[in-house]
Length: 481
Image (tube, rainbow, N blue to C red; front, top):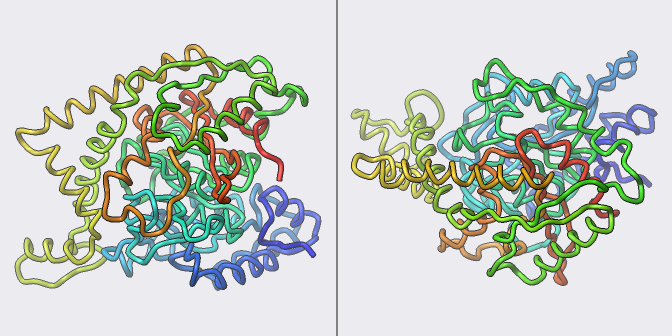
């Protein structure tokens, strides 16, 4: 018997179009699995069963009337920092508890126009600040594959939903690896598009010059299908770029079945294979390199000489932007308000009660690096190093089509570990933050599992608007299930 909750987007569309099942049946199957898993996995903050079934029924009505659309009737989960009209949007923070989105984010409007069904809101690190989904104001999410371990973050709920067959696909956001790292830990595909490739309008801001929305899916083909819908300019987002959107599902069209990577050069950044890399993570990355060679690719060692400055640069730039972006949560306009006669005291009490410890830590850091007397020493210097990091990637891409590297230094760790060691958590982003600082694109791809059964991924990194090359390589390297 077909297990509908385990289908991919492509399989779901084929079944819906053939009449093998309806969108309502597909949505019901997912809702049943989702609700049964909430106590242990806790992938969702809220589940909109009534709304999802109504949307699915409308999709079935449209299909019966002869209509079709790229995602008509396909149920998708949404990270809890994107506005979906009529649904709560809390960014997994108590300070936004009770807030209901009055409009659709652009990515949601695009998915809605494509016929998608919205299942609910996935859990995340509060305001996307974290690498484990343990900083959520509504409790942690557990890895559905490596039970007892973190799913990664900040898009851990979305990764757990897809990896645990609790959604056909999901949306995440990537500020310093927040799509790719949880995708690696949960054994799924995650895409961080080029900065400006996908609109950020209607997405709760974390660090505005780094954030990017992207798909989290079970297969490379599914990621390409979602990118076809999500990508493109948006007049509501001044940072979105007006570049033609190709059909990403054609990235691997016409390739030699035996040597689909013939003619491609993949760079191997030596700084990403240094000390501190878990032996099993290294071995699986080496396996991916060997498969790339067997499929026709040429491998070339390249250098990203400023990679070691990525973490300090990122945590200065990111916290500075967070301190500015989170200033809007003051108890005056929306969300939590702790009443007080004095407005300054109201701000203080509201933020003290509404923000979690990690959010407070990063706001304080960001305020410090922007403060008078320290701005030039920290933020100004970090911006200069950020330029050098971007130039490193540009130089590497002058020699190769894409880079192949591990996603994280180690597999998923146990829930609760390192919670009192923020630096240890920050260092888990060491292989991902450079992509966001440079603004280029990247894709996390399952590479296998450790002996303990923990998923491990590799990442493909491409130049600005180089997603077609990433999809071509990823499709060739994708492990058969």
